[in-house]
Length: 341
Length: 254
Image (cartoon, each protein chain N blue to C red):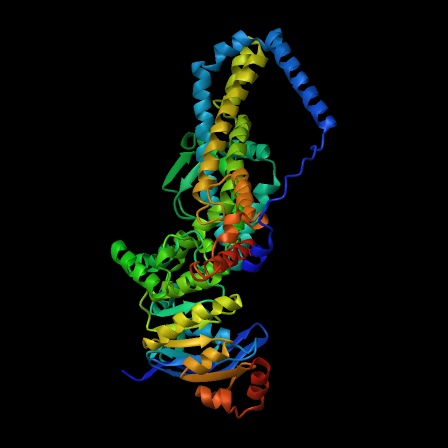
């Protein structure tokens, strides 16, 4: 290493004075798009069909805000259910018991293989298919007979339908996360005397989260939008159905569609921020932890710089003798180790 | 207490149709450093993993301190231990892996305190104090807050040794601890192992480092094809091997 450093001439050559490559077509396209966008905004602001006064009137309408709350509640309750059932299905798919494995596979196959709208209609018909819920032992007079429609409100039918459909996707996401962990990790934990649950909690899950969170964030956003299908149950207090019902009375659907869209966008934007926070939290110990790709690239360039352009200081520095023992070498080894993985 | 720390009798193990261990007999005395040598595929790593029941065995028995490992005896029959019971048996057996297997989301210090705190329910401050002492012992006191990715292979393996020692084991298993290291980093790991051997730890080491075996080991066992071919002092096995297969192996590696 020191020989190479010495071989580099001390005086730095003049920087190259090159004219950067031009991209005329790219620039033209950029201008054209800016023009079209401006034209669209100016036109939309003036166009009567959008009815901006009505939009402003309904954006913070009490009914709309309530509906937005219902949509959020549906999203989070269904997601919680989906994550719990998904984890159970993922663990079942990885057990040695063939019956549990087959059942998990079958559940995922069914709920992933049929449209969520059809499933929601089915769940809505639950109370006509099973009109009563009988509690008791099989082949005996039931102790308690309940009317299904009374026991399970439509809101919870909607949550159930959304959750079970989503659980099939969550199961695969969780499974991918668990499979991404090197078996050496669980072996090391076992060798230290850690049991299954402790290994899961302290070793496997914190690492699997890095793989699980990005797709789960997508699923939450997708769930928020899928709640607009609960009208199939039929449940009508969510954001989309509610705004549609309002516009059915006012005969002015476009501003209310805009209202619903703005609320959906508002929620998804917040969720995206939350997701990136979580991703940062679970990237502990990763290379370039906490750094954005851009900052990392800049850092890489800075790391390389002294090697490419040996400054006079580098050359003057006592090579090897004064440096801490093996420090440079182990740094290099550490880097290749990380890259190889 | 008997002098025998680890005793294996007629240990057999198959993976599917592959018969990996074909009746291994081995005794390791307390405080002894025992090196297992042999070509790859000879079953030495598998045998090592049977000693703390990371692998189950098909027949024979393995005892540590006179206690049957991995099974409970009821008259004539053996019952496999529950995972929690097997985990409890492993608490006193440290293991160091070829690929280090440090937990990448924890710092060096957290890697070391993890098991004492969560398995042995040690006080966090005490575990921390002891972890710092262990890091000093392996020469990495300044790396306590470094993540595994920021350490060289040799440093990672030294942290892994400290992590195993944090559970105060009285038996250490080393599964090719230097095979994944760049040649210039092997020495620092072997030095730590040497000082551990001098402190009286019972060690079973699967290795290809002939120099270490000759210098540090009390006994050397040469395995090939799932059987023990030759067993004795380093002098007997490495310098005056009796068996053709040992001679052939040694002529290739020395």
